[in-house]
Image 1 (cartoon, rainbow, N blue to C red):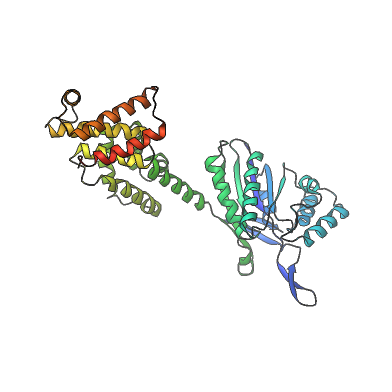
Image 2 (cartoon, rainbow, N blue to C red):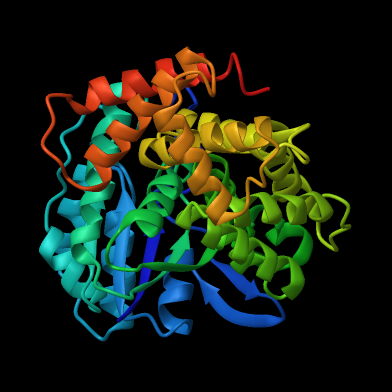
Length: 414
């Protein structure tokens, strides 16, 4: 487990050069006093240096184009770490990088020397300018390869101060992707941006922490999990400190959804309706939780006193969200509940449900003939899936049969 700094390198401010007054990079950073909150980190020529020296960094990954000021990176860290600057190495890096353009190869000389000057298990990642889709795709592949440099439990500190604005935006999303899907359990603890342009007014460059982006991403992931799967565990975790009652409700709802416990789901759905009346202290739950919960509840309008219809609507929702096994169970049970309700039997009583099931099997006219056929078809497919039975039906045929069965059952269960 290591604290890893991922930082972007730029080209420095533009100045007028040449007889025609064209703008070129000055090939030097403006020194600034960096402040993180109330703490003055000191004066540095670029942001990565400030974080490198003050945040107990274990590993450094620097990202930039071939035109970036890699010579300045070499000079700064070689001096800082007590090394001797090799003027030939410095000049060769500077000449190559200054001449490099957006069309240059992803190469700079003396990469090993630069990494050695930085120390701390440093790695340089050269990327394209990202001026078209092909270059963006190449950058995506390069950044995703950084996962190989990370270890389980690593903490990432990301600095997006320098470089083209489009590059940090693209790469931040890739790092969030790695955070969410990597098996290494990577944590992004900070996203720093130094407002160097405020140096003239403040006399220092304030560093802002954009880690709210991480929290927003967590909420988005949680909302998608609820919307797609009825899984509210992540949202429940995010609400833990604000409201333990809502947290417990959402966890219990997720438990019964994953069990496909039909009676409990109907009860917990009522609990979710109460949640819609709650006023949250912060905006994110209001903006994210309530809309996705409302969208889910809209599927079950008018089902409060109709167990068969609730179970049928649940089967529809499960089919739409590709939870086909659960949909088979819910549809089968909804037809059985429909038969119970039609015969004035308690649809929640185990013995009465069993007796009605026996009647469906023995009496061809107890429920509509077409619906009875659906019941037997669904029962057969449910048994094939649940008991790993050999069948001539492919998965595609079972899914298509389920789709047709839902349409047919919907004619009767209302």
